[in-house]
Image (cartoon, rainbow, N blue to C red; front, side, top):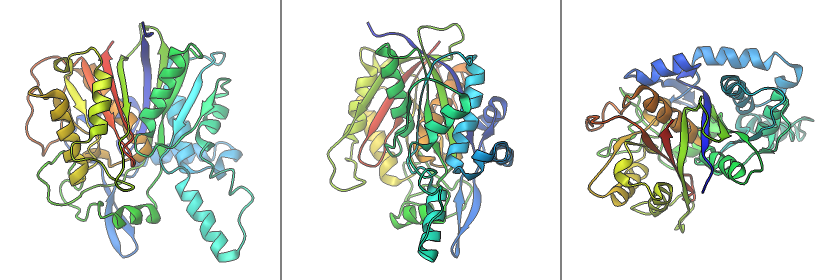
Length: 385
């Protein structure tokens, strides 16, 4: 029998703000949290941190001389990790693992140091250590003074949920009793936005809802990039203070036709969702928090996969990205946060421009999806504690 794995805390930093009450209030509002950024001669929508969250990061950066040279993605992870560990009640003597990944890593610093190199032929002494992918978990471990294993990885947009999978596996194996898992991303650089525009998936208009995630009738791609971080605390056993337990995990990849391809019915999602369901009936799932990045193909293929998996019964469907933008490696854990909030409040938080979906029963089981370039799908079934 698999061990029960509990989620005992979650913390995030995003355009929705920082702190449980602020984040909750903004999830429940019918507004998006996009602002404008000038990229070259264009002005585009972005999901930038709130002013309050920016102030927290600035204070953190100057709280320690060593932190002044760190990338924003690292500082975001430190901030949310401190908060999650505080919520969980973990003590300094507790041994816990850390797995916090990122799709792009230290994007801002990498571009800065590369520009300096092109201009001068030289680079700064710290250019290498502050741009390595392992930066995030190692600095979080330093900040928390933890003694357990630390892992960083990049599995594009499913990074945070892959971190959850990894922490779950460590706990099931008995190699740890606690794991801090999640993702962090700071992709709002001109070069990163230009990459999304080159793929012709970035939102072109700044209207009432720039990102039309879960609008299955849209005629153009509407991906908007966002920044932020989110982590949760996993513990072995059924804990009295648990927010939810992990009822099932699923993962899959699919054969690629090209670098960013996905099949018309997202076979990777079909496999990952069926694996996560396991012996659970599809009818037990109350909500699916979709990956739904706001692109025509990305949204529709995932919806078709849900149709294939659930048949005549389709759960309530929602996504975070119309509100925050696509936070790449952090996005899966922000989806987990939304799932936990809906279970806690027993309220369905939907997408305002999507087809109305009436809630007819308590929200007790939520399936969370994420997928990255290369068809790396992950599905996590959460059950209310």
